[in-house]
Amino acid sequence: MCQLSFLRRAYTREIQGADLVVSGLPFDLATTFRPGARFGPQAIRAASVQLAEIADFAFPLNANPFEILAVADYGDVDFVSGYPDKAVEVIEAHAKKLLAEDVTMLTFGGDHFVTYPLLRAHAEKYGPLSLIHFDAHVDTWPDDGQQLDHGSMFFKGAQRGFD
Image (cartoon, rainbow, N blue to C red; front, side, top):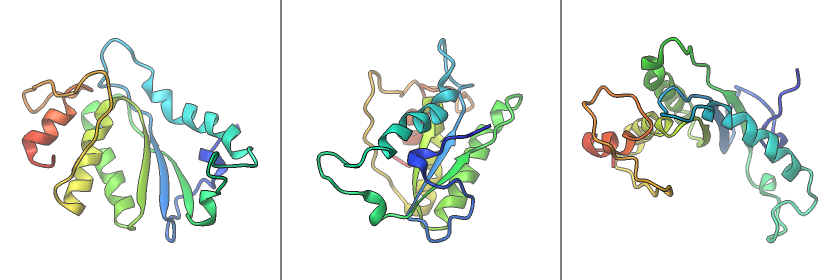
């Protein structure tokens, strides 16, 4: 089976020396009504292939970002679907591992909930964060602190102080 990487960058878990590491979080167990976001990372990679084929890579700038950035595709994070309560731990550990290498993360979800453990890991390393969120809704549903869903992750983040 052939797996497509993001913009045809090498799939590798050896990220020393990389500037930007792409990874996928194929998780959609926290969504309501419309599952399928777990297919997002691979769909983004598949769509990116045609961009990698274009000679004038970064239209209209006519510049190739790979001349100045070392980019690696780490692949997708593995989830055991029978344990959705472990998702935060798995995603946060993944982010901490990459951040420990001082790389910039470009992470494809999954449902919106995957943002929460990514924010936690980044806040632990960098301190208070700023976030710009473009969406049709604000994803700030209040919850009891235990709820796992795609609509409360920014509420959780603000409540815990990494806003």
